[in-house]
Each structure stands twice: as structure tokens, then as C-alpha cells.
Amino acid sequence: MKEDTLIVTAGRSPEDNYGIVNPPVYHASTVLFPTVAELERSQQERLNNNTVYYGRYGTPTTFAFQNAIANLDGGYRAVALPSGQSAVLASLMAFLKSGDHILVVDSAYGPTRALCNGLLARYGITTTYYDPLIGPKIEVLIRPETKVIFTESPGSQTFEVQDIPAISEVAKKNDCVVILDNTWATSLFFRPFDHGVDVCIQAATKYIVGHSDAMLGVVTANEEYFDLLQKTALDLGAPAGPDDLYLGQRGLRTLRVRLDRHMSTGLELAMWLESQPIVKKVLHPGLPSNLGHSIWQRDFRGSSGLFGVVLQPTNKHAIAAMLDHMELFKMGYSWGGYESLIIPTSPSGQRTATNWDPSHPTLRIHAGLEDPEDLQKDLEDGLQRLENASGC
Ligand SMILES: Cc1ncc(COP(=O)(O)O)c(C=O)c1O
Image (cartoon, rainbow, N blue to C red; front, side, top):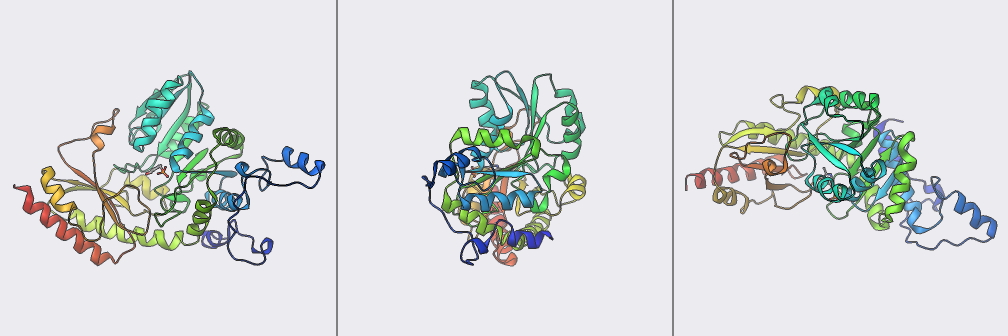
């Protein structure tokens, strides 16, 4: 089946549900068994796909979502978690123990860093951050106790594209698990398992849910690593909620058309912004001016709507003059919904392995599904206010 058909059909089984198109929302803790034999069988098979045993182990609502994502990712099986952050936590806890060492990309999502520097450090796990553009040279950072290489490509603030195939090759030679946070690209724009990734995380909160109204995470693993991942997720005892799972599987059905639009609008705005004098650089892997663009061209099948803008030096007051009065680009955390967003970012405060020049303010833009011309006009007016206030 082609991907665009898969995205519409994966995880659905109307024949098991009175012909109703979408998988129903099962709210469940207790599941009843008619006989001792059935109860025991279910207990033994509770980790199998689609076994309904007890609410925390998943219901048909959970399986519909997990099966669809595993299918689209091209992995073995997936586990759903209640947020992207809990998906990061489960993935790290699964493959690390006290005394281990992990390599984490310097451009990783802030709370992933906080998790490594806080909780993991308290449990005796040491982190080394590495340059996102390190490629195969990552080998020099590997120690005997290095167990995991954590990647996020592109990073969701500075948008460097990592050479995942090269890193995976080194990881395989050194018995390290490669974990990728693939939230930016989703399975549609980056096929993790084709590039040597072992464990793929998505904050489904973003593009998969797509409507900014649910928190959801999902991790797909290859066959070698799935059991440990599943066991850890169950030990953490935090299943994804049924209504959020439902919204995740529903969002999937339109992911392709939404992503295509996020891509075209994002690129259009990025190219226009690149020509503006007050803009120093646009951080978008789809632009030839970006480091990592050739790797993106080689490995990715598209770009989503999230990118960064580095401005010429200005002041806080001017940034506020721009952002406080935007008509369509609203300020708020997260991204991947239908709506456009803009926030000031501060990458320099979040890096240790590489330098980021703090004298140039940066913005992060999410290109939503509004009309691209309206969005450009909103940015144009905003940049005008920024310029006017810059001299003050
Ligand atoms: C790249 C990335 N990974 C993970 C997460 C965490 O997802 P959630 O907010 O669902 O916990 C985020 C959230 O912004 C993110 O941007």
C-alpha cells in the first residue's frame, strides 16, 4: 500500500465495530473474563499486540493508534504515552542504567536536556552533549559505558540537520542504541528505520494531533529493542488517555494534506524572510543557505512548518513592538497545530558543546494553515514595527 493510502487506513477496522469508520473511544480500567482459563490466557498474553487485559496495558483505542504509527514509521511496534516528554523519558529509561553514559545532541529540545541534567544525573547517568553537525566524528566521544546516542533532527530551535545514517553506523559498531526525536519531520518526511534509527519518538501533540487540543507521545522501536521499551513504558505506569489517543488517530488521517501545506507556506515565508534586510539568517533546512541542507535533501522527503529567524541586533523593546501586535501569528508554546505561532527564543542559553551568538535575537515561527499571503503581510507589518522601534 502506498503511504497516502496507509495514512488513511492504518489502525482502522470498521468490520470489528459495526462498520463505524473511526475506532471507538474505549474508557476502561477493568476488563472482565468469563472463565479462569480466559483470565489466565489474557494474563500470559498481556504484552502481545491487541490483547485487552487491563486498561493500563491498552484498549482497542490505544492499539488503533499504536499500530497505525508503527506501520507508518516502518518499525516493529509502537507504544503510546501521555505526552512527547513522557515518550522521551520512557525511551531513555529503557536503555540506560546507573553508571551509563549518553551522547545527546546540543540542539535537543530544552526539557530533554533538563531530563538528562536532572533526573538522569540523579540516577547516576552521565550526559555529554555533542555538536549537531558532528556526523561520523561522534565516534571519538563514545566511551565503553556509552549506551545511547540521542538525536533530534533538525533541532526544534536552531534547525541543524544531523547525519543520522553516519551516526547510526558508528552506533552499531559500538553497540549503542540510536534514539531519534522525529517530531519535526514525522514519519512522512523522515523514515527513521530506513536510516538506521532503533527507537523513534514523536510528540504526537504537534503535527499528528494537529489541532492544538491534546497531549500525546508515541515511540516506535525495531524488533530488537521493543520489549524493553514496552516494559519500561508499563513500569512508568502512565498510559495515554483514550480521548487523546482518539484525537491522535483522527489527526493522522489528514496529516499528509496538512503537512504539505505547512511545508509550502513555511518555505514561502522562509524565502521571503531571507530577503528582508532586518533578517540576518533564516534557519530552515529546506533553504540552500543552511548548513545541513544537502543532508536534508539526501535523507528527508519534505520540511514541516517550523523554522527559525535570526535578526540583526536590536533591543527587547523592538521585539515586543513586533510580537505584541501580530494579527495572525500568536505567541504560545508548542507547534504543529493548524494555527500560526511566533515566539522569541534564546538558543545560546541552552547549549554547552557549541556556541550560539547571543547578540542576534532569534524568533521561532510556525507556519500554520492560514492563507500564505495574509501570513506574509502580518510578518511584513511586524518587521516594520521592529525596524521602527529598533532605533529607540
Ligand atoms: C522536539 C520536541 N520533542 C518533544 C516535545 C515534548 O512534547 P510534549 O509537549 O507533548 O510533551 C516537544 C514539545 O514542544 C518538542 O518540541
